[in-house]
Length: 383
Ligand SMILES: [Cu+2]
Image (cartoon, rainbow, N blue to C red; front, side, top):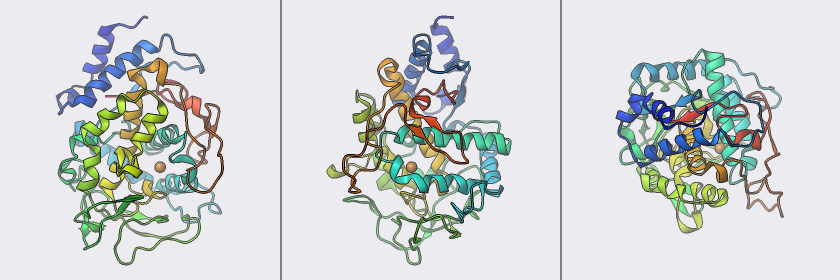
């Protein structure tokens, strides 16, 4: 079947909640991206056997467009991962107690090879997908990974359906402890928020972070960096410091600005910030909207359950950017294989054939296999 506009319109109309919900310019461009992705499937390179098409793919939706019941099903599945035992080798990550911790451990261990690198977007895409698979296959979740569309809440994140502290949210702010603001990136110090203490509301108020921290940015007494690998057992409460200053870097203009960047190098570097010029970018902007511990920790940030809503949104930015010009932007990679600035001379550049390692989370895959959300291991789209 050739591409038909009616099929595309039908796909878009299949999610009435999203179209009725506070539609912004990004949503409109995502709709265009989906139409392009449907068209591109007929001419794209056939690297893999896959029966997936954008028309039969799973649909990832925005948190605020989910019904209360759907939010509760997601929250319950996350709680199930937290209540399930770790599968990781204890000699590798002695502090991992839960299946949720396994994800944190793999991220901590690979941090310097997966940030500001050529694999940043594909690695985190697969990581978020593996988490979604664990929710579905190990915890009976029937839905898909929701995302946090930051621009919809950037003016007042605390009053968003993600952070309002209700039983249908991802829990609210930490209790108030006076403190200085975090250094969110070299040279970028944010205004402090009104939290800093333990989270006291919502489904994750009794959550225990077990791994890290390795790079503390929350400046409150008693929160100390763990020595060594960060993979030892260090149980502590979940702290947040919801930060409006950070959220200002995730407004709609900051997102839209990314879509005109024609090369993957330009796109991914703007998304990850231009610190030398005082620009935090949407990636760090989202992380520091949460702030606290472990959310404000470069290594241990997946230890806050809201990480996966944030990184699904990062993936939606990537997916939108790719599918606005899928012929030119799907099978592309650029950038080093290790975080710059660590004194390693001339690191190798990432290539499409580089293998990505996921230990007990998912099968190892090449970057090429992780670039199209409707082939390789994937079969999902965004609305
Ligand atoms: Cu990361």
